[in-house]
Image (cartoon, rainbow, N blue to C red; front, side):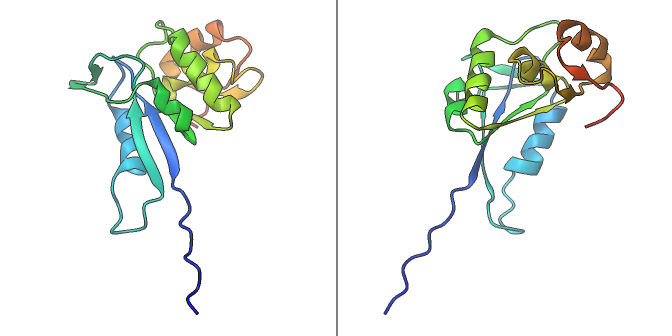
Length: 156
């Protein structure tokens, strides 16, 4: 008798939000750790994709990219990754804040790097919780989001 086929667990879906004007470092780190094809070392653990709030090309560092997915990609994300932000003085759009909030409400993990904490704070996800951000943005972050327990002395 043949044993029943083994089901393959679904790979965890990570969706990284890219926005115009952000640094190239943080998205590159996210991709290198989570999105690069490393099947020669281990099985594929993640399904990795990127999205952007707008339809225009996105400037990241010195490069310009076309991002195929809009914020609707966050509806299927197990983890939403926000690897930095373009500027602490430029608040995220209501559409992005709403999409991140809805993803969180349905159980997705929200992960931010550096100034990406702006998006989580704007969505109210950090209220009453400890958080950190890039040291250059710390004072403005604390002023804009007083409900967040900002700790500017930690890296993570």
